[in-house]
Amino acid sequence: MQKERSTFSRIVHVFDYPTKLRSVAKDIEFIKTKVKEIYDNKMFGIEALYTVESSNRASSSSQRRKPMVEEDNVVGFDEEAKELVSQLTNISELLEVVSIVGMGGLGKTTLAKKVFCDPAIEFHFFVRSWVYVSQEYNRKELLLAILTSVVDYPSEQMYKLNEEMLIEEIYKHLNGRRYLVVLDDVWTQMHGMILKWHFQIKTMEVESY
Image (cartoon, rainbow, N blue to C red; front, top):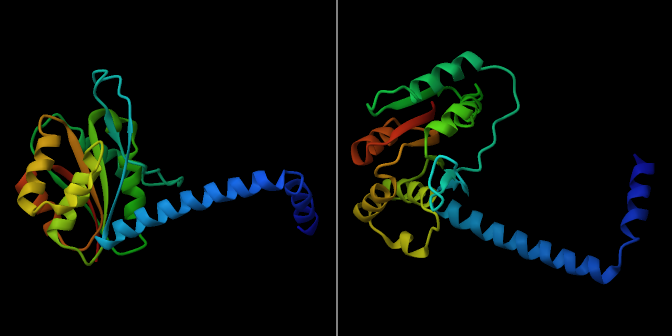
């Protein structure tokens, strides 16, 4: 281990010192930006992760919502995941709230990620949203988290909208699209019911008790 550290030190000091300083400065600015983003999200007790990727199924002017959620590299849950994927991608247009319920540490989120990242799910749903929900939240925060995860370019104005306006915006962005919303770390069954009543969203909940 000591030999490896010494070798690494010799390699690092080969670089030009001013170049290293500029690189460090850029890294610091990047970290500061990310810390601010995380802080702003935590202020609302929620976190919505996503990015955008091109879709061959969509027109050239359209984009598919792709949350930045990576599947845990674990073995297991194959049968359970297969069943959930089948349930979420069936041809029925009926709206559903699919719950994964259990005590903490049983792998509920791992299973949800496995389903969420399944190729069949990615192909089936034009919009996929993954929202982390804290125990201390309110309905407006949940609506805001969903909205910011389904629009291409979230704006500061969204944070000033009331609940009714948030619902209208979510409906406007999702109407006519096939979409899936995952609520991770849910502590009450009312989350999914609220979404189903207001937006007719097909949801998958990860519940703890």
